[in-house]
Image (cartoon, rainbow, N blue to C red; front, side, top):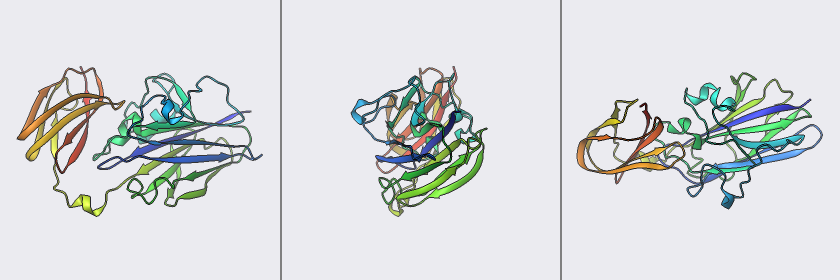
Length: 282
């Protein structure tokens, strides 16, 4: 009998993004081994990117121990849209993709937006035959750097995608994160949390209100001080769909002609970068 292990990796960045990756390793009871590699890179794309050696194997048969980073649409979704960790957002992908390597462009995030965009949420599907299966990790590419300056955790979920247990990831190598004894606990959520250094807190703090949100297209931004900078909006794939400049203003209004969906609004000044989720409902 074959069993499936689902792993979701949720990347959440604060203040800025930086390139980095993690590797997860799997070994079953008879010594079979497999691994996946995933992370963020400013030059990556959301789908298959051959420059990072990504290959789509969706639809091919699974081996006896087979780990794949998966992207699923609204029909074929797994725990990525079942777990409470998605904050009730629809984290669906345009296409169904399976790959061993998956790099994506990261969103800069001051307000937890990383949990609400598909770029920063990785779901890994494991086909296993022989249990137990040991799960280990290599975080050496991120731990001790700016991107690994906070803390990271793995959450073991049960078959209903509910949290069961968790462990911190605070070292370069984790030899044994979990021992999966059977298919009863078949999902793991990895939350990679990034925090800023002291120098970032010394920057002037800017805040703003965005309303109405959800919006049919007309939006207003109210800032806590006069600002000069750039306002931009990206869709969930990271593609910029709107940009405009603002010059010494406390209020900004515009009318957007965008399809219904979830977007990310960025405000960039000389010393600040803020981000908010924007939901368009036409």
